[in-house]
Length: 373
Image 1 (cartoon, rainbow, N blue to C red):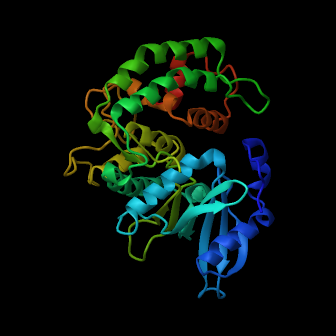
Image 2: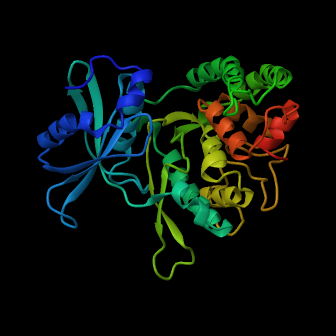
Image 3: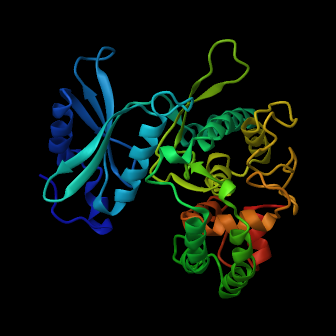
């Protein structure tokens, strides 16, 4: 039914082709008792995602999301299934409802999820219409939801749970990998953004600062995190009549990168993608996370973020990140570089700013672009 061999090279040629996936989609949904009316390819990503209209014509019909994972992304399936089962249906988080999860047995095994369609439009699609206040409102609401996620008992996600020592071993391995990945970050013409001297300064920074930051993490710093809260994974709907805002956060989805890690790790895609480094919106997110929307300490006294970022400005050198006082700006820089998506995050940032190769003359320049003082 499906190809017998899959690699990242041929996966990009097939994962959005509805004609290839129609037979397995129909088979999976038939076993669940759904009749398929139409199949539409979803947003490009790691997995093969399809919007499937079932049964009667709208508004009486059902729309489902069917997501097949390639063999190379089995871990993504494990993470998503684990999180959806742990959080559904009592969770206060606005997440898709899990209908089914399983393995389609073919020449090779194909893990899949079936989810109810979630309401809303991605932040990316609405970006040009969002005002600064809209972004603050979105940030504040996302902060409240992430607080709920981070309070999830780690024992509910056994497939993801790990000790701080296991996390540290992974993080230490990233100190060598990150500069190699960033050396390949280039503009469309293929010229690297970061010169040899900047990369050497980056290596020196990670050699000196990285082990200290990683060693400082304690077991209590770890929580279940989403890991990829980007402008593509937050869906908005219009606010209800009478609300003092224009949009509401309707859905947070795609838990394929969920893991148990320090909270610092969560803020990297939030800062760079969802909020596009908007300081006021990030401050609003931290207030929402703390359970406080008036700019005062919340009932739990822990923002899980940077407490001294203010409405005008910046990450201070004595910033309080991840809920732990006394940490410096260096901490968020280390977490930015060790993030598994650091190369993609930094490439998108530099491209969006139309920066030319050679403009970044030092590591200090790069740090100021990523986390301004």
